[in-house]
Image 1 (cartoon, rainbow, N blue to C red):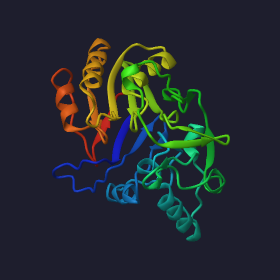
Image 2: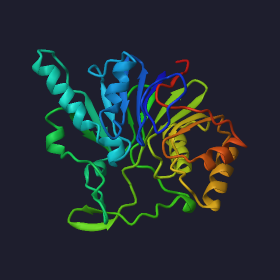
Image 3: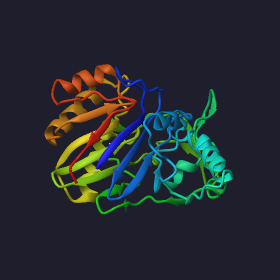
Image 4: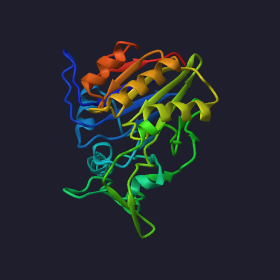
Length: 280
C-alpha cells in the first residue's frame, strides 16, 4: 500500500508543494486508486500535477466527513473532469463514498454553511454516489468504517453547530466523521481525515470491524487542537495501552499535542508531498 499526501496544513523543506488548512490523500493498493478527501480548493490538483500523478483514473473518492476543508475541492475536480471530457477524453465515473449525513449542510451561526456545497443530485451527474453507515470493504484489505461507535466520554463532540435531519434541527455531533483502515499482515493502519469522532473511538471501532487488535500506524488528523489536559492525557494513555506503534499526525493536530504524544510514541513529521509505503 502506498499513501501520498496531496494536501496538508504543513509543507516540508525541499519538497516545494503548497499547503492549506485542509487534507487530501491518495491511497494506491490492490490495483485501486482511492482519493481520501479533496481539501478546500484546487490545491490537491495542482500538487498532484507537480507530482506527475494522474487523478482522472481514480477508482473511488472517499469523504471522511462533510466539512468544507475536506470537500470543497470537489467543485474544481468536477470542473477539471468536465474540461477533459470536452477535450474528447473518456473518463469513467468514480465512486464517491461517504456517510449519508456528510451531504447535509452544517450551519455555523456566524458564517453559515461550512459543510458540503454540492447537492447529492448534482454529485450524481459526475460520480456514483454511495453512502453507508456500515463498514464497507473497498478492497480485500481497505475498509471504509462508516459510522464510528462513540464510547469515550472524553472524546464527546462539544459543537454549537446545527444540522437538519428529516425536518428536525439538532446539534451536529458529526456522526458522519469516519475513517479508512488498511489491513496489513502486521496489523491495522488507520487513515483519518479529522477524527471528530475521536481517534480512540476510531481505533476501537477499527479493531472491532477488522477483528484485529494490532494497530501499527495512524495517519491523518487527530482533532487535537488545544485539547483539554484530560483529553490529551487520556488519549495518550489509550494509545500506549493499545500498543500503537507510531503516528503520522497531521492537519488538525497542534504542536503541543504532537510533542506530548511524541514523548511516549514515535510521531513522524509529514506534509504535502510525503509518500508512505507499506508492504502488501
